[in-house]
Image 1: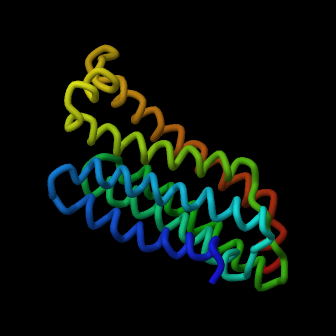
Image 2: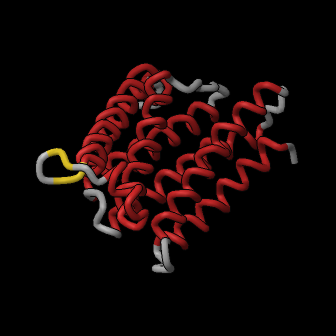
Length: 196
């Protein structure tokens, strides 16, 4: 198994550990889950970079890399609903979009059509990771002592700026996720309309 594929498998493992730590209640579990999610996100960046640089693109990587990404981000968003850190309707939109596009790609693959990632899809992924990291920072920084309060605790109006940023990041993520999904479905409509 080459290095990019090892990083993809590591992302699956890190997702499980991230969730276990997030719900564990051990000391500094929020900060530890932030670190774990950050490491998992970096594996996504490096596995693609190494695969392209060293021409190590495999069928396993094509299938499992995007699946690992969706499981990582989807698990985090669903966990946030369980922890009352994000509205369920927002997460439903995000998860529904990911399932729909995955289904479309499978349908395309059954017709020997390869659907490339769209520019909006890449922006969507960045916005999702940003939103997740901002939630994790928001629940972690109170444990970081004076430094945490100085950097993240200053207020904009009634609440710390990191809280306002997190709310904004969640709305941007939902909007980009929905919009990118609609664009993708429209641009590739011939794939599913031909069967109607």
